Length: 339
Image 1: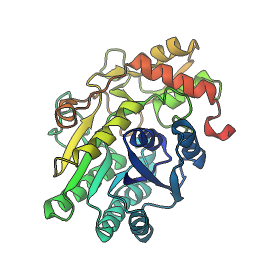
Image 2: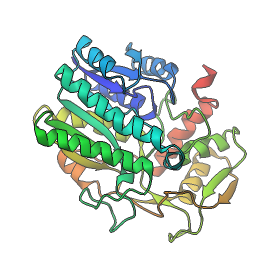
Image 3: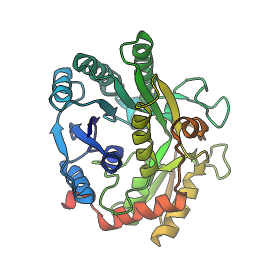
């Protein structure tokens, strides 16, 4: 069985990916600092899959510890999720974002080379593109990120591409996520922000379950059909599957690749709210606020290269995403905290 180190493996996307890895015959070894996650999420993965996960508390910036874990478990590859991810927060805490997202990637890559591990799947972001020059975004779109978060991810991408060009690490898959939402259909694992959610869907779900009184919508004067921001939302399970397919690719095709992961369709904030109201049977009170720094009016993916390269395509609809999100939130109104 191929062991894979999963940094940030207790997080939202990390847990869902661990489920898919186990289903495909990989053995994930999780390391997480639990700043934005909890060990309960790992226990839920074990409950869901009937498998006990190996996990450690640790920071991805600790090169020595990462190299030790890679060697101890004879990991053949790494999936790197560990990072900070809120666009608005990054404008207030840029040092933290560069430290975790950029320097953390540097430290991890150093540990991998020390341990002789040469396969990496990297969690990047569509925010590296910035204001659209054209839509949908293809992987060749200019990179002009508008926030410290996006720039920290771009810097990490540049680092990894330079490592690949040097020949030191040949197999690197950079996956540019659009907007993952939803949860595992079982309702056992899902997105559970430790504080006030920075992303739309967990905020909507917390309003629906009564944890918050209303949804703040940041800007309703964008040049979009209903004035609210348009994003390419994809189901987190679809996203998780792509990471496993990226690892599978390394078995027969070598060299770096950069891929968009999205559905290829945009939905507005109000589209998501309406779909969630229908899925939950709950009304979502709204309050409109000024635009947030660093936000963009509209963007969505051209995911055709991911389909061509990995055989991957998003399968779930917005209705599926909202249904599964509501299953998770209604069964876990306080998230993992109740456990």
